[in-house]
Image (cartoon, rainbow, N blue to C red):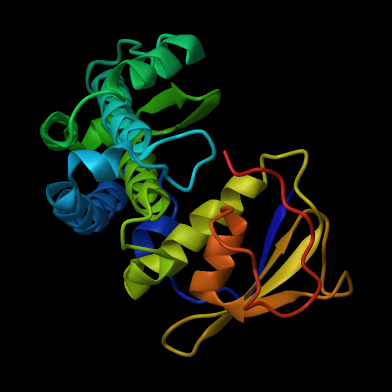
Length: 264
């Protein structure tokens, strides 16, 4: 299994680097995630308002998916995460999706709708997520839930949704890109993405030297890479993030770029 090593870590938002096993720590992490998600949601809804029927039927950056596929997926993802919020609140299992087949069928069922209905669906799903999150007390954010085959603490849910919104805004290919993600969210997203690589058996072994907008730098090692391992990939944070999640070719980066597994 790939391992993540952080060298001389810079301070991150306290809620994400401090232990989150306490109720207070989990609640603080969730609150920070919800603030970050609010920014992402504003960007998403602004884009949704601008789309017409011709645009939503056009291709997205995801192979085989139109923009209507992406928008429907964003709505159903919000509803799936509401199920996990309900699980955390009630301590009664509510799977994110009944099955992968049901998830895919729900997306396909929505792709022939006009822009107006797609927009209403995204807005309504966003509101359902916000209402469900508001219904959790501090202790619920420390509950354990299971989504997409992984067990995690409920305070991760707002961060999962925030990442989902920004990544698929890029996939819509109607304006917003990686460069539009706020600088104060990039480091958190990057750490989150790198952390996900540690659970992948197919993650390559390499180091990353990342420069952030404020001029600070941070080094990450993925897999069994160490300071005496392969040459580090080097670059600014946003191109690094885009490359890691398969939304950039890494042309702006320096060093030897390994082949990455498909981002899930």
